[in-house]
View 1 (tube, rainbow, N blue to C red):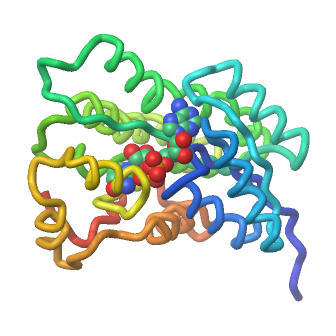
View 2 (cartoon, rainbow, N blue to C red):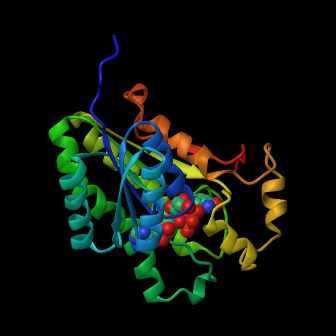
Length: 253
Ligand code: NAD
């Protein structure tokens, strides 16, 4: 007998582009109501509209994840429209390339405000819903580069290394409450962020030589990262927490 389950509500940050957009679409097609949150209001609106036109249920939310009150308002709005939030994908992030000695205090503050503090604020905003449900799934997007020996993105890599450590700490605290916390570590994925780096000439060597050396010698697809998120979010992954899954074509640092 098929039992009708109410839609779970998921929040995906940075869902107006790239990996976040693919993840929002994937979770919607898996039957969840999805909060499509982005700093870029037009992008969030556009992704939510496409999901709704395709028969899914999405709510566009415009907020900067580094702005705690704005995130709390956005989560309250999502909860008010579609219900308590029990799935969170902390995906939104910024990157920049800069030699170590030229990284300014403002650059450091912005990088850590968005890439790390934003995860604290967003998670704190949804945690009461997960605790009340006694069930929750959190996926934090880190970066494969943070596991390598790479230069010119020290502030970005430090923030993404922090995401890996934070994932484990959150998993330790939240596991007894029925909430799993895992991290997906993308390699070189074909998104607007990667295109900006490739086309802006920011990378120290020819990007095709980087991904061409992988066992799967191509750029990854945002949908392939979304699929890894969907696994961690699934019911079947109930005993999987504190894990780091690379989606990187088999590159080994
Ligand atoms: P992207 O730039 O295409 O999309 C990121 C989205 O996040 C954008 O829509 C942007 O507006 C939004 N965003 C940025 N700052 C925000 C903020 N403060 N508040 C709310 N929204 C904000 O990037 P992407 O390539 O899809 O990256 C997604 C995630 O994957 C990021 O965490 C990134 O660090 C990680 N990642 C990407 C790659 C890659 O090769 N593309 C590799 C490793 C890790």
